[in-house]
Image (cartoon, rainbow, N blue to C red):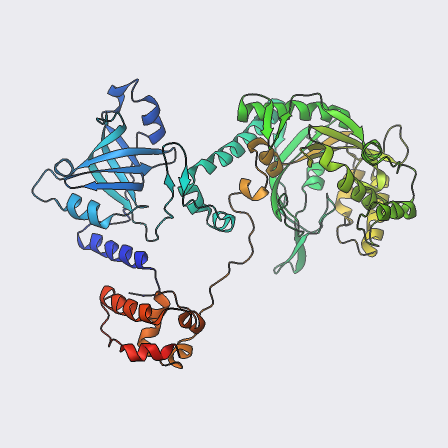
Length: 573
């Protein structure tokens, strides 16, 4: 047995072997069909006690109270926790009491999965419990769960709260902090409600490529890879827009897709390099029609999650029932800065950024400079749902020119609680204009803008076959879920957010310990005791180390010579 394990891990592995020695398979292959769940039992038993006289339930052991020939425990399934009551003679009706005296009391641990057959009753204190007739081991847990203590009033002690650990070990987080499951249940409701709304309108859900030969559809830096068989570069998609538009060209009236997007950019509280977006394109519509559709859709989502269109987000009550406020890009900057940028050229915009202390760089054209001013001075003020409309043409290469305002495009972004969650256009369907716009993007790329769009000749060819007037919309699902669940970081609404490489504890070589006089056979024992480097050992208490070595020798049943106290003292010189 390896001794590079914690004490509890060693004990659990020994229990595993003892279970097998008793003829109990700790990981049985047979199905265990349940007919009851914790939440259902606690919610409905008192009204229909006769319906719970033959229940089969399964879950993790989360607490235990051993009391001689009878014990209580709590098991947790996907819906919650319920107390179980075990009486030795009930689960061991014959002379052999091993299942209770040895298996349950000594070999099972918190975190183990068990199957229970029995009936529900009320204890003398009025607590709903399952009286166990049969107990079956379903899975032995070899790592101990963090012990999170919960008082009846909801107070939590020793919580598993470190975000680094919670996000990296989500499987532990959701086990010991089951309340966080509600975030992901709500996430599922958001997507289901949107999908249901779109399907009712007759629009079709589709799938488009994730690996793309040309990164397009958004201004973002892509992840690049290489396909060996085709010997060609490929990119993880930054958007699915250009493929969905191809399907409008193909004759579909409405198509939408929920999909993962990938952008090789920074990470913060609202950005993850892998995120979920929904994009939808509807033929014969424009961005004015799309505003109304978005209001109906988001109110539907809010009601699906909360039952009402008003959602609490931090200190703000956000009302998703329309109509939403509308401000043009230029008017919003004027409103919150007092500066009219509508007639400024690139030089004047750079000067304005300097005066506003907004950091810019030489690669930025007019569109990027205006966007920087807007992001720095306007976004945070947009708390209630607000449409920012009519963007400068330089900012949006894929949107149609404004029908009445020179130099602008028909575009809106929806901002809620200071963040953009939706982006929509009257889509550009003029192939000649579209080619010119993408050529302008190539110029920006030549200036060093690594977020500029690439030229997609196949997409342009598709437009040349003719695309009807179309409106398109993209919604960031992760940010929308953040709003609907009152979360301030994107990591909270992702099961497995991207994390930095896990830091491994520095471990010295055996020779490092041997060089200060530690016998080689005792080095793994010191590692087991938590001394991974010579420096950590020398920072310890010599007398305690000596005593602990004796305890470890006995506990691990090591057949090696115990070093004398003088030898141990010499390690610390």
